[in-house]
Amino acid sequence: MTSLQGPSLAAVRLSDVDLGLAHILDEAELAKATTFRSGTLRDTFTAGRIALRLHISALTGDSPGSLTADYFCPTCSNRTGHGIPQYQLPSRAGRLRASLSRSGNWCLLAASLDDAVAGIGVDIENGSAADFDGFPSLVMTANERGQLQEVPTALKARFQTRLWVRKEAVLKALGTGLAKAPSAVDVSGPIPAGLSGPPAAALWKVEDLRPAAVGLPGDFAASIATWQPRDVGPQ
Image (tube, rainbow, N blue to C red; front, top):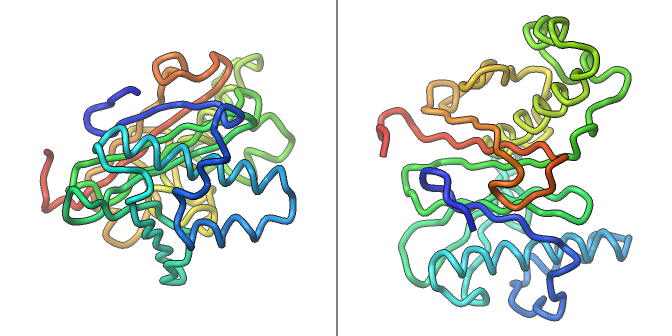
């Protein structure tokens, strides 16, 4: 388990997660698992949710089965298992913000005990995940495409993937996911641009993670994004 100025991070192999622990999930999470027609996808989803509960339990000392999932989707105001990952804990008031990202057999987990954090998002991908025709026009802003022109050809795929995981981390922290077009959000700097509403004026932190520092294979790209309302001030 690794701490990054507040958020607690950990990488796990999904195949190492004991699916026999599915009983620690609550009804909303189990119901969400049944929506996957593929057994492989269902097991991957279940393993990720189990791993996230175990990660939070290790951080807070609460029993993993005592957590109450309170996922919230700001788009549809839904609390039935999708949206922003957050949990109610027996040991503390308020909701604990969390995030997870899966890629292949790996999952990166994040949780924050900082009540000032309004959103947290992590994302991981294999280093060549964004190496396909059309990626710049579909996903990148004009500013990002301009920066891409300055990148040596051999490094373009890695550059694109780095931007992709940063965008995914920001969109997860917003709670919108890909409901908001990635091409509308510029993540070439430490503060995302192109946002609207309260998050546009928030205190943001977007960072690239060293794979080895969080326990991921070296060919991965990983990022974390957090934001808090500006009137709260730095913690």
